Amino acid sequence: MIFDEPIFKPGGDRFIEMELGDEMSFELNFLVHSVSGLIRESRTKGIVEIVPELASIMISYDCEAIAYADVVTEMSALFHAVGPLDGLELDSRMFYLPVYYFDPWTRACYEDYCEKIAKKEWGPEILVRSNGLSGLEQLAQVHSGTDYWVAALGFYPGLVSLMPLDPRCRLTAPKYNPPRTWTYKGTIGVGGALCSIYPDQTPGGYQMIARTPVPIWDPAQRLPAFKESLALFRPGDRVRFVPATREEYDYVERKVEAGVYLHNVAEYQRFSIRNYQAWLATIDASDRF
Amino acid sequence: MGHYYRSLVLMLTVIKPGLETSVQDLPGRIGYWEQGFPPSGPMDFWSFQLANLLVGNAPGAAGLECQYNGPTLRFERDAVAAVTGADMTPTLDGEPAPLWQSFAVRAGQVLRLSFARLGARAYLAVSGGIDTPPVLGSRSTFHQAGIGGLAGHALEAGQVLPVAPGEGEAGRRVIPACRPPLSGARSWSIEAVPGPNDDWIDAAGHARFLASDWKLQARSNRTGFRLEGPDWSFAARATDKRPEHGEHPSNILDHGYPVGTVNLCGQTPIILVNDAPSTGGFINPYTVPSAAFWKLAQAKPGDIFRFNSISVEQAQELRRGINRLCTEDSIEPC
Image (cartoon, rainbow over all chains, first blue to last red; front, side):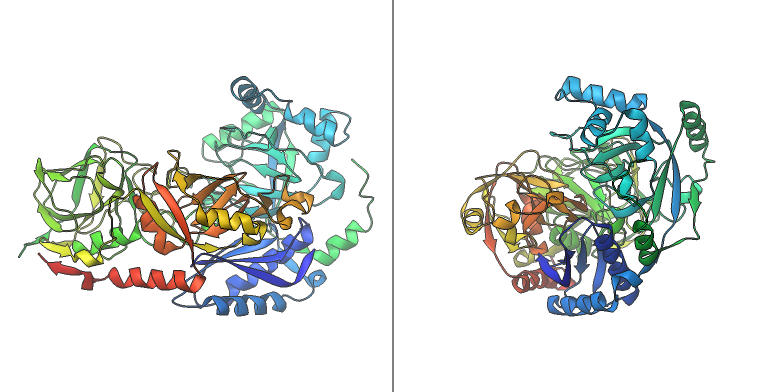
């Protein structure tokens, strides 16, 4: 559900969690980013930083500049200023990322886990089985058949939580338990109903199904896409995975290594909830590609 | 009275790095939290600011955070330095160097910090401040992502740390009553504010959290402080919830993590500190306020934490009290 009034909860002396609802849905997340946009634009004195997430916003504030009760009052007012959900629009860049499905690296990472931590079923096979798919080919087709919404950033710099926008391409998967101690940089994983891209070699729990050679964060800011920010994505961006062969993967990787890779991004698009919902009404959500 | 020193580009050569000694500054890396960058910065910001004030720096200027076992450094130019926080028995060319007091160092002299005898984290400030290149507005080291500090990581032997020109005066000390009260006792009373997810814990769970001893585990660092203690019990909200929250009662839809929060992973509470992940899928029943961070910073594995529930307003008042002590008024001539 989406709350009529946000719920505010303190996090010690410097933080307030603002909960806008209690579900994982695109509409609720769109509301989160719309409210977050207004919070940023308002430049409310004393608000230091915000972290928009799936259904909530974590706010850090300076109590010497604004009291807890005033944060609540100001943020509630911004929540109501957003207006009805179906009238909302946000700028939304579209990134195209080449991905190599069922690649040898994530397979090796899985085998390393089986050998050293716990024996388990291979991630792509779990996804095929638990989502009623015919095989790996359909898994790649379904996974790459939708735009993904950048619902949140966090946990590790640049790490993204992606929601599929086409309900026909929804996939769910259990997470690794216990988690992996390492994951290849660029791994594409599915956990719960979310998809993620690992920005660097980090621990992880999502089932690994593919790898992209395209960096999504770069502390050295080598490529042009990172001139202004170390992290590629902003909430509200969209991502499309483009299946690539090993040759295409290697080609892009060489360009990245040479420092000449240009990220494939369309910067001119706006996302309208009304248009999205009108389109949803025309499709049969139970149909797979 | 001490002497005034003016240096051009002062260098510190790392002879021994110590254990994860890192460059930190205040307020740390602010403005990039939503991309996943934590604030970093010194954990005991009280001792850190006093070290800077002693040597005539702005209170937030970059200095070194030394953990458990401090570094050995050679000064390549004359300087004024100060060490605060944990007692790592500092020596200058083998002679005892004072704590909580600025002192002159001559070019070629070696400052050595060893094992922490009292407390866990010591802070070294040098007049002018460490002058490594800022990354995203801060010199603080965030080693998991390899940014800030010197080459993105803790100090390594052989590295050379640049120090900005500065003026400092030797022979100034922090008034004892203005220092964090380190006693050497192995048990700590730590303030905690209920929330944000206090309503996921039942009354018995809250009572147990506040009445039990929590032992600080060895697997604790600038990311999180793991605690060992009794099991938690949960309110209906934690068990009767939508499936997208996850299976375990401590699972919740991914949300932002306040710095200082008591993050409950299954049954293990982890206090998330300066280098912690910004978001995740576990509940946060309590949050340790900033005024108690000096205690976290100075606690050692095996120490016992007892939590004391306070309100947001009380937590903010405690912080104001520390802020009042992090000023020139706390400094006096020796």
